[in-house]
Length: 225
Image 1 (cartoon, rainbow, N blue to C red):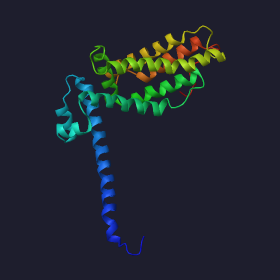
Image 2: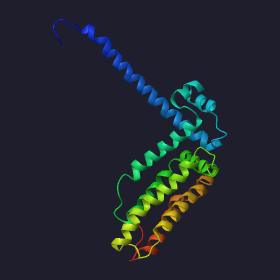
Image 3: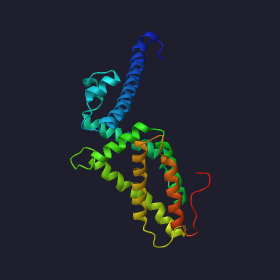
Image 4: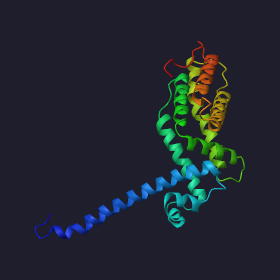
């Protein structure tokens, strides 16, 4: 500090920086609360019947305050889906699988994780059904999602065929598409009856049967999955 600079002359800048950081933190926290509320509303009413005004009310802000963070209901929907995707990719798909068995063991863990977040899973089911309409704002998202799932699974499955883990001639695209359909179908049944339907157990049994049918040595899931 220069000798002729008094501490008081620097304090406004420091206070402004501190206030700025506090403002950003409040904004991030409010944005997160809006996204959480939107998940519940989209899950209960779907996209079209959900209201920005009701979502804002649940968060304790005005609709104008919500629109300060999200430009429109369509933007809010896209951000809700993007956050869910980012979270799942970071938790389960941030590395390359070394085998088909490892890939399916990871999918079982994803099913277990989904069983702990009822609202998000129900929202996904509702929006996926609505998005069959090409005019729905999430139509492109779900179309791209299934393409991405098949592509992501095809890599390790193809390598498993080349390494001799899976039987030659295994239709890896069909296997990936079937797996996605089974996993999402089981989620629908679980949301309808969360206490009576064992989503994780059903998917684990399916993955084990599938692996035993396509692995060269008839190997299924590890015993500790």
